[in-house]
Length: 151
Image 1 (spheres, rainbow, N blue to C red):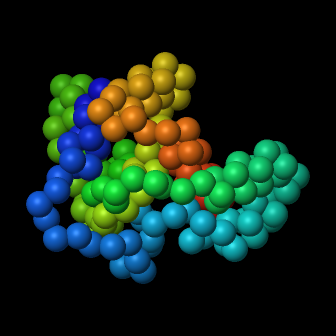
Image 2 (image 1 turned 120 degrees about the vertical axis):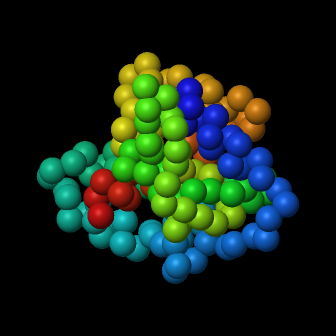
Image 3 (image 1 turned 135 degrees about the vertical axis):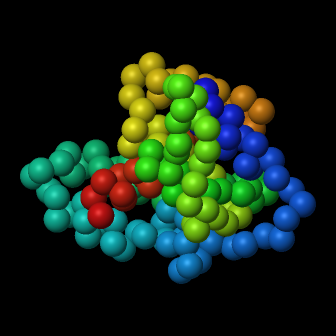
């Protein structure tokens, strides 16, 4: 899958000055817990509309995990609006304003915001090849998706 391949290639870049996550890129590449207080409030405000217990459980579990590998380059806003497609193939990725070096979980959010079913499975399988992302990374990605959905 083109999206997974692009992310693998981006994260393989080594010889560029690092840019840490921060206010300039809305903390993309940092740990999702940077939004802990706001996310808990957002989840609480949606009680009765969403499955509160399930959402809070997902959030709390993700906040207990950690990226235990060297930081990697992330796009920061790897979403459908920043992907250009021609003839069914990814032709370009735009808007690198959120780029940083850190935890790749934020770039995996597309698995839940755009993909579903078999397409999601293929993306996750393809993305894991070569970097062996653990279940905790995917859990943090789901937490980023939850944060975005409730923001």
